[in-house]
Image 1: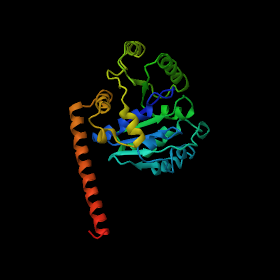
Image 2: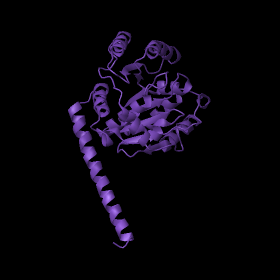
Image 3: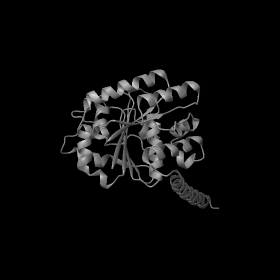
Image 4: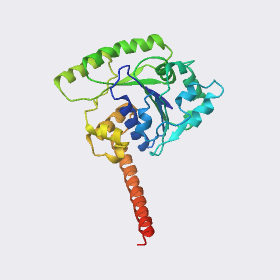
Amino acid sequence: MRIVAVLNHKGGVGKTTFTGCTAQALALSGFRICVIDNDSQHNLSSMLGVGVQKPSIRDVYCSDEASAPKTLLQAIRKTEVAGLHLITAEKQLCDSDIRDTALLGQTMELCGLERYYDIILIDNAPGLDRVQGSAIRAAHEIFVPTELRQFAIDGLVEMEETINERYPDGAKISRVIPNFFKNTKRQRAFIAALHTMFPGKVTKTAIAVDPVFDEVVTDHKILFLHRLYSNGAAYYLKIIHELFNLDEETVWEQVMEKRTERMRQEARRRFYAQRERNRSHGQ
């Protein structure tokens, strides 16, 4: 089982959209995925159509070592994507809930989640405090989506140094993902700078700006089912190919198969719903 923390101490870099779209794509490709919403704004929980549910990740943090595994298992919720499960967050989540930043990792191990999942993705709020520290210590590696702006780029090296100092036994940055790419000369220069700062860790694919991302987040739609032919979906197919060493063509075929199956199910539901309406009106 692979545990990945999606992290950036800066806000507004697209962490939640990245986590949600990546999780959906992996699940549609046949992987068993669990995502943990580790952000008090709980946007990922909303994006995946689950909302705030109790118990939440906060309840896990507030449990003692003996009861935490049971609480974590009870917190797992199904989403509308087969094979994709979610542990939600709630607005009360804060640093004072974390008595021990090692608790989450220890609890996940005690639960034996490797029997149920291939990949766990942990979405995080901006910052590098105790809530994020729990994710860092539980994860095997860190993915860092980033804007292509000077302040965002400058802060990444400092962020890596802080992670190493505060959580020496925690996960390290394994991949940096350029986000909101507009293919300008300045942004290409920023990508070149990223390659210098993080050699071998920057993805070849930069996720381009696309209004489809706001649409799927706002409308709680699934990028790879409702907007499969968008540029945004194409970029994410390339990204998961890089990050998880998947064959792009195979992933496309699997997603297409799941999309076709989903469309058939929706058509059947609409047919039977219309038939019931007709019956109720005596037609």
